[in-house]
Length: 293
Image 1: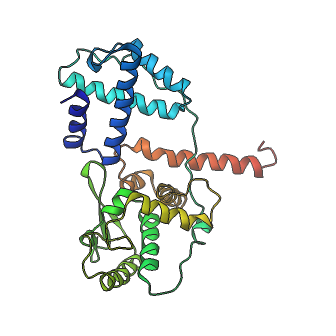
Image 2 (image 1 turned 60 degrees about the horizontal axis):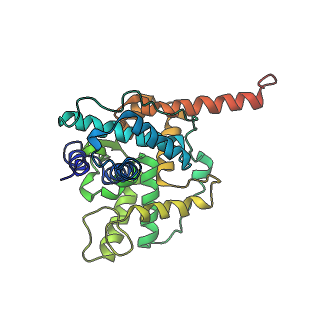
Image 3 (image 1 turned 120 degrees about the horizontal axis):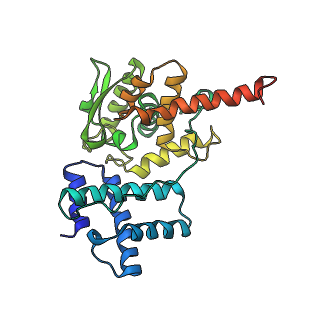
């Protein structure tokens, strides 16, 4: 088994990274290994020097990759070589002295509340309509990730405690409170779903064939629903996650509470929403105050 395969097994079994994250790590490392072989005829990743790594990162810049993408590659390599040290494959990491590139602070993109309220559905007792409506409302009202939505099961909806159980990254469970209205939507949808499909996948939300939804299916539904209500270029499920958090913060929710609802391990990750609000206030002040400029 190659060192890359060993590393992938490690992050799957022990670190419990999501399938998408695992795929991204493998893709990054295979690209890295390909460069080392084509440039240095080096096929042993444990004998690589720091200058070789820096040369690889420069080549990514020459190819036009953004600083954000290169920083992701640096993160992959740092994690990989920590694993190599743990396994005794290298005495010291060759990532010493390799620093992240500066990148501009991008404000979190979200959909304003008045635009969210423009999303509408036909008032028909139709399975697909009620499914799409529930899909959208769960994402917006809970802020869960796309993969977390796909993994929801009927048993994860606790109608007595009025909450849903979510299996997040690295199989960490968290509970998110939901409204009585959302629970009524779930019950109505379940009745339509069970009438539509005699047998179906063990999931709360299903595709048009009664099977588990794919990530693309969820993305496409959200994109189409947001298409007519917002000018944002990005119209994805993750935008609804940002929207959920931003609207909570705007209404006075604490960052710690938002952190727990989103399932962030580090509060610093949640701080982006505070930064977003501050930057908006700066822009409002600049436009509205006589001396704001």
